[in-house]
Length: 94
Image (tube, rainbow, N blue to C red; front, side, top):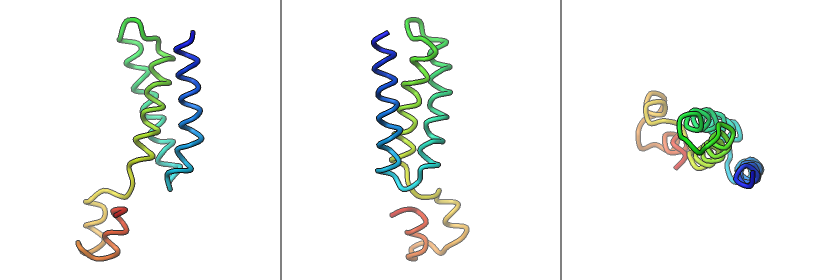
């Protein structure tokens, strides 16, 4: 029960802190959802880890990755802007 409480507290802290640090809340939420789904699958397979704990851990990790990742993909920006221009660098988030 303590791991569940710790995981829940971590997930709540990341959910509130990540949007403040990141510019794109939608990307953070998407990362949390994908991480939570992946964590739930891992929790179902790994003995000793429940589905709920796996989802919480995966959700927290996914939110962090979503907060850290910034900018669009290279192919998206390359198709719209000339490489090396200010618009391209802004699109990439650099």
